[in-house]
Each structure stands twice: as structure tokens, then as C-alpha cells.
Image (cartoon, rainbow, N blue to C red; front, side):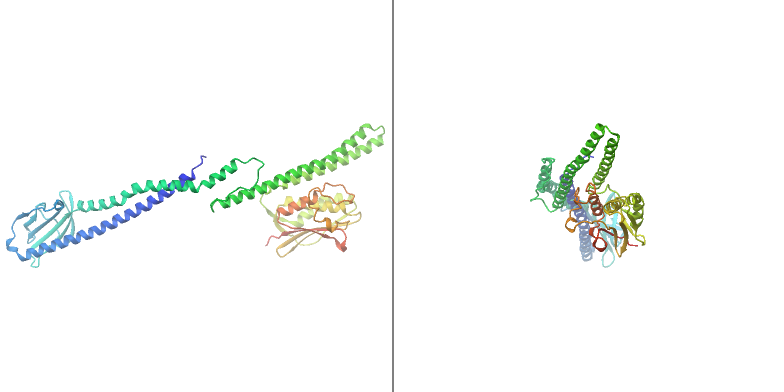
Length: 447
């Protein structure tokens, strides 16, 4: 689609509006003036007829069939007749026709004589002996109206080009900050995400500049996160890969079957750890964009999702001699992304199982209070010291001394999914001050 010129569009809109208003005003003035002119000329016809009637009344015996001379060039368009008893033409102007100007005996009337339109006023004298008719050609009135219209429209022919030239330079000057802004963006290098300069930008452009600067900030943060993520991921993957290589070398060089089996078992364990790390990395990569793939939130039941997650992780809990229980309660429905919430639950419950002592208990609860819905996972393991709780949401951060292997990404994923849902995450002590309790507070769907 071809780009349009904002300057040209504004200019055409302005000139079109001015021309339309001017023409509308001229049309109104023309018809209004024509109405006033007709009224004025009709009054002149009536006045002329009255004067002639008065003269007829004074000297009727001197009236004879004669022609009055024309004293003005426009006089050919005005004519009068004096009819005795309305039947015998006694006096008329030089340009008056031989027949009556109008068949009407009283008042105003319109007539057509020899293809020409006439406006006629008829009146009797006091004795009703003589009929006076005064008429004017319609074309005379049309010429006056046309002159008025010409005087109204003629200035437009000169004013519109002058206005267009003035508007063109004014619009060009007003759009200069936009061109400067465009040059700033065009001349930027791909790694320059600094704020745009718009000190002289008009008020209408300022929101666009603010939005672009905010976008640059978000993109800058995203790029920085990607760089940090890539560096951390490379660092974290280096360790399990090195361990895998070492164990593979041991297995390759082993002379005894038991030593080889032990090395291969370590290789399998290292593969599981690397696989889990890669899975966590991919999950974080999918959660990093500002929007979660444009997906629409839907209704989901936190209790049902928790029950499904517990069923999936039950074999892992059994192998570690850990009991998982889901607190009783009613369904808790929210608007969210069920797939992401399942990932959040799986990370929380899996962490609780792995850091819980054998014989311990992991408790999952979903509850609703007014407009809030909370999802909590509690264990009775070693817990996290209060001074470490603010750091565990950072990527690859792990609490030392736990004795458990991991990537340090589980709670990062939990925090990111909670952020997408606008749900704060709170870390606290478990029952009796022992273990860890993680609470994610959602907004409940009101029924």
C-alpha cells in the first residue's frame, strides 16, 4: 500500500473545508440577496404603479394612445400600460407589448410574453376606470443576482491559492519535528536504544515519542535479559557436560565391569540433570516475551490443576518416601493460563518433594477469600533462610548446603508465571516454623 502524504492530506482537507464553507456562505448570501432584491423591486413596481394611477386620476381626459420615450438603457426592461376599463390600451411605454402584460387585474403576477418572463403589478384607479400594469423583465433581476454571486465568488479565486500557499508552508513548518524524529530513528545503529530527543516536538507527537522511548526501554531490558540468560545458560550447561564427558571417559577406560557400570550410571544421572536443565531453560525462554504468545486467558480451576499435578508427581514422592496431600475445599476458579499454572505447580511441588526430608509431608491448598484466590505449597523440610528468600527468584540462584542438585531455575519460572498473572509470590515458614510455605495470590473470578 502506497504511503500517503500527511502534508497533502491536511492541505486538501483545509482548502476543501474553506471552499465548502465559502461556497455555502455564497450560496446562502446569493439566495438571500435575491429574495431581498425581488422584494425591493416588487416594491418599486407597486410604487411606480401607484404613481401612474395617481396621474391617471388627475388628468384622464388627456390620455391618448401615445408612446412614452425611454430615458435609460435599463428602461427597456421595465414597461407600463394603462387600459381603459381593462380593455382599451390608452397609454404604454415604448417597449410594452400590444397585449396586456398580465391577465390579472390586481396585485403581483408572473407572465411570459414572447418567450420572456415578466414580473407584473396591476392596480385600478380610484374610480375603477383605468387599469395600470407595470412590469419588469425577469432577466434584469437575474443579472443583478448574478452580479452579486460573481462578487461573492471572485475573491475565492484569489484567496484560495493564497491560503493554500500559506497553509503549505505552515504545515511544513509544523511537521518539521516529525521529520527530525524520523531522521533520528533512521540514523540509529541497531544497538542504540537510548531515548529519542523531542524537546521541540508538538504536544500531539509527545505521546508517540514517550511510547517509542518506553518500547526502547523494554527492548533494552529484553536484550539484556537474553544476554544474561545466554551467559548463565552457557555457564550452567558447561558443568553437566564436563561431568558427562568425565564419566564417559571413565567408562571408556574402565577395565572392570563394575567400574564401567558405575560410570555409566553417573552418565545417566548427568543426562537427566542436563535434560532437566534444558527443559527449564526452554520454559524460561517461552516465558520471557512481554506477552505470552498472544494467548487469551480462560477459566481454570486451581484445585483441579493441583490434583492433576499431584497425580503426575506421586511416583517421585513415593520414591523419596514423601507424602503429598491436597487440602479439602471447593473449586477455586480464576481467569488465567492453565498450561502455565500447571508448570508453576509442578515446579513448586517438585521443589517441595526434593527438599523435604524422607517421611515428610508436602501439603497443597487452593482457597478463595472474597475476590482473592490463593495457591499454597507447604513442606516440612529445611526451608530457606529469611535472608535468602529475596534472591531465590533470580535465575540460577541456588541456596548452598541443601545437598540437592538443581539448576536454580525452578522458582524463577514460578515468579515469572506469577508475574504474567499479576499474582504476588510470598515465601514464609512452614508449620511450627519448619520448612517452607510458598503462597501465590491470584484474583478470583467473581461468579
